[in-house]
Amino acid sequence: MIQTGVRSQESGVRRKVRRKVRSQNSEFRREFGNVRPIPACRFHPIIVLILIAALFWIPLAAQNRPPASDKLGEKFQQGVADLKAGRLDEARAVFEELIRTGVTAPFVYHNLGIVYQRLRRHQDAVDQFRKALKIDPTFAESRVLLGAGLLVLNRPEEAIEELERAVRALPDNISANLQLAQAYEVHGTPFQLAAQYNRLAKLEPENPEYAYQLGEAYSAVADWCYREMLSRDLNSVRVHQALGQIYMARKDWISAEVALKRAIQVDPKLPDLHMSLAAALIQQKKFKE
Image (cartoon, rainbow, N blue to C red; front, side):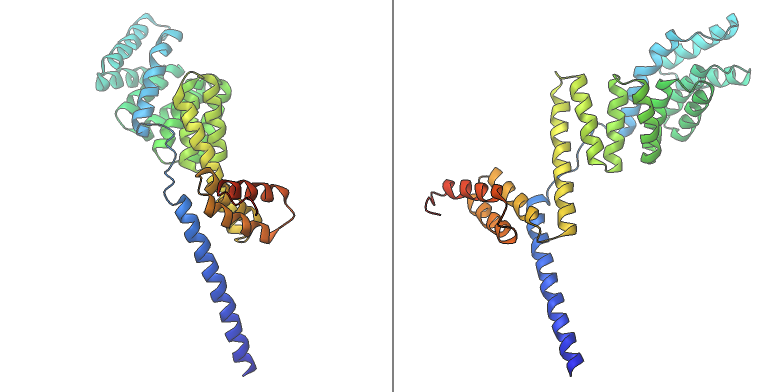
């Protein structure tokens, strides 16, 4: 009988805890259930990397010398012309032939990688960018496109590693920084995402999109923090305080009053709680309270 009574008492406690968790989670879902994912970029990742490739391969052909032989140099320029004109099969054949003849210049592999990207052969593209980087590890443009390709292949951790190295080499490059933000979003790292959009906002302060995305990233950080507090202590004073602040921002003074009073019940010694509660009461014209 004693054991039965103990089990009954324990069951009663568990039921109370479950009800409290469901109540707290329901309240949380009402506040955060419709939070949408942060769009690090408005385009599909495949389109993004193709656009980035378009930015990189045109100057690259001019900045790097073609193969030493005049004949091979003409062949290389023909491949570049085919790539510019969108004749991808022809460009691929040219660059592959140059490699078969023994040309080991990194920009040949780089341009072949771009061809593969535009043909949506992303693993082949990644392989070519890796070959370019093996020859010249400082070839940051190839590293950006390598990271973009890894992202399309759903390998965000590898993409982040490569893109962080690319951004260190090209700190002011918008495309590199934007791809890194995309990788942080896919990987679900809100703090790094916010830092990355802060960098982009400083690089292009006249661009309102980056300021907007920075605000969205900060919202994701706040959301993460609130979820962490919920997971650690449902009755934390900060959980109730945060909920009260949300209500105050929405000018829902009654709900703010309820949440802040809960926080004060947990810890009545925090002066900022009393100040916030007083502000909510003033808005309701409850001057005596």
